[in-house]
Image (cartoon, rainbow, N blue to C red; front, side):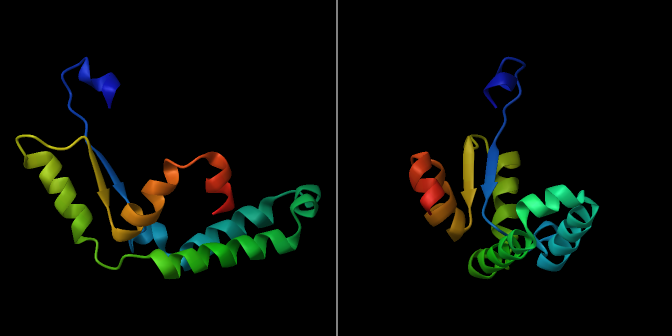
Length: 116
């Protein structure tokens, strides 16, 4: 964002939480992970272990169920505001999960982030 200012380009960062889109489709994500997992050499699979793959998948599905925002219109509204406002904000944090969890988490010390 700051690098572009030298060229007269104003950049607004939109930081959405987890919204229901094709990118957050749990079935699609799992299918892609399985494809990658199946292509790994046996020694790499052994290092991680089959259990790792399943635990990671379960954790991601749990987070999706807890944090997934069904209504994507707040993101679109932020985009519209950033593009049409005379004085757009530098950062837009969108979604209750982003405001209450992800954004505060990013400013915490690494040891706390890792614990959470």
